[in-house]
Length: 190
Figure 1 (tube, rainbow, N blue to C red):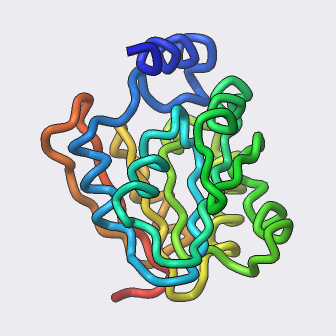
Figure 2: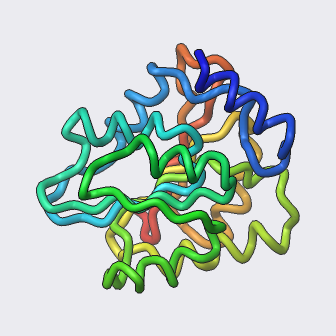
């Protein structure tokens, strides 16, 4: 309950940076984890992990292959500090930074590309220049056969995503409050 209160408080303080008023529901988290490919040694990045619910589920559910890394990029310093205090796993690293810094952060981890990038940051409401910069950096950071998984409350980002990625599949997640849209995005049409 405390995590939900903290999440709501941070939404009120930073409504353009925190994408929802509450953490993602368990049903939605399960669907997102199911969309993550399971391969050994992969690099998984999450933009905007918030209170760490998705990261925790990935770690606990076997959603990460053997030898994988989970790099969490959280712009909100309150959430970033909390993630650092609560996620004690050698596969996890937390960075208090913006999503546009993904390539620099990958370089720090001696990774050339990310196999999976998860995103819940509010792409639909951020300024166009910032959104374009993040999507360009994401396209550069994503492996050729990688997957960019976006889950948002507001479902108006298809055209933005298609500007950088030709393959965008959209799915409504049932049983989630608020309702979420899941976008599975790839560099190449599959």
